[in-house]
Structures are given as C-alpha cells and as structure tokens.
Image 1 (spheres, rainbow, N blue to C red):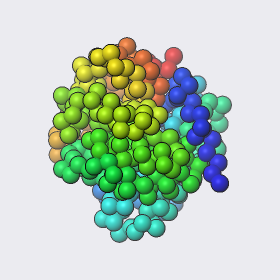
Image 2 (cartoon, rainbow, N blue to C red):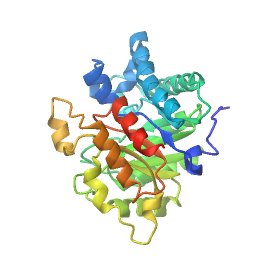
Image 3 (cartoon, one colour):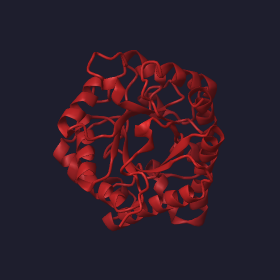
Length: 315
C-alpha cells in the first residue's frame, strides 16, 4: 500500500501556487562538479556524496518555497531512469526499478523535513525514450505505453503523488505515457518542449499536440507544461483559438538561455541568462496562461532563477 499524500487531490489543480526546481543536470554538472554520464542524475543515488549533493540541491529550492509561502513539487532525479537509458549505463530492469524507488524515497524524506505547512507534492520524473532535443525515432502510442509502463508502475507503487513526463518531443510518446499512468492509477502531467519557432521538435504546433493528446486519452493528463525552451521561443504561439487549449497549460519550466536546442547541445559552456529577466518573462506569460500554477526552470537555471521567478509570480 502506498502513502501518496496528494494523488487524489493535487493542490496545483485546486488553484494553489507551487514552485519546483531548476535545471538539475546542468546545475549538478556545471556548478557542483558532478559527473553525470548520459545526463543521468539518478546515478548519484549510488553513494553518500551523490545523495548529499541531491539533498543540498533540492534544499535550496524548498527554502525559496518556504520564504514565499508557496507549495513545492519535488521532481525526482529520474529523467534518464528508464530501461533503454539504464541499459547504456549497465543497469537492468530490476536495477532501474530500484533506482526509481530509491529516488522517491529520497523525495519523501525531503518532504518529511521540509518544515512548511504548504503542500509538498512528489512527482516521478519521466524522460523521453530517445533524445530530448531531436526525436529521430517517433513512437506510436501503443509502443510508448509499453515502454514507459515499467517506470510508471514503479512510481505508482511508491509515495509519488503523480508522474511528470518532461521534454516530450512528439505526441505518440505523450499519449503512451498518459495511458500508462491512467492504467496504473496515478495522475500524469505532460510537459512538451518546443523549438525556437514554438513547434515541437516533431514539427507539430503546440496547440495541436495538446488537443491530440487530450483527444486520444480522454483528457487523462491532469495538466500540461512547457519546458526546455526560452519564453521568447513560444510566447507568440499562445493565443487561444477558442478551443481552450491554453487553459490546459498549468506549469512552466523554461530555459534561461535563448539558444536553440542544437546550439545548447553543442555548447561546452553554460548559458545561464539573466534570472531577473526570466522572472519578468514568466510574469508576462501569465496573461496568456492564466492557469499557470507550477513555476520552475530547466537547462541553465538554478535557485537564483527560481527565486526571481517566485518574486514576480508568487505574490
């Protein structure tokens, strides 16, 4: 039996504002000096130094949530913790399940010590099966459901309140994950990434992707997010066409950098942008996205950016 606290009543779905963290992999690599093979933060669970590094990382963001009276989404460090990626690191299905369980146990411990009366929600983070920037191989929904069911079912048997599919590049994978979560009895959130033209890496318009995912799943996702793109890349595509698709976007984890995905992939240095400017950009987006409730960052962002975002969006 799980002890998920908010699985049946996510506070961000009820109008509460929640912060979340920033770009965990870029922070741990460029600021903390950790080696993350294949961008896999879950390997830090292997030893005391890595686990402490994760604790310290999340603690900075929880402090911001306390300071602003906001809730918090503890997103597990498991973006790469699925079977194909794990196999490249020598981890079989049993080991991958163990890492996912250990990650949620760490999140539960952090929640227990958060010292806040505001809600702290635990989310099991799911990444794409392929490259988060370029979907060379796009899956049909049935294949995606079968692939991601292993990680989703593992999370469903833990204290995770929800699962969040981050950096989704095409709708087939998004639909498959939403269906897998529905079958496992755990809420799902789908976070699409976009290119500099505001379209998914697959070329599909964002509005069409959200409508198609909802249609194929009976509206299964609790809500949608946008991540791993600068606000300049998608601000111009957020005009509602009357279908209400923008109301389904309730979370944002943008990049501080204006670089394209291709440029970021080739860069050997970290472009962390301007935290205050990013916070202002978030505030401007609330006019087009009035249901925004979850605020965090992605590549290149850290606690400075989330504190700036909070200062503009959590008052």
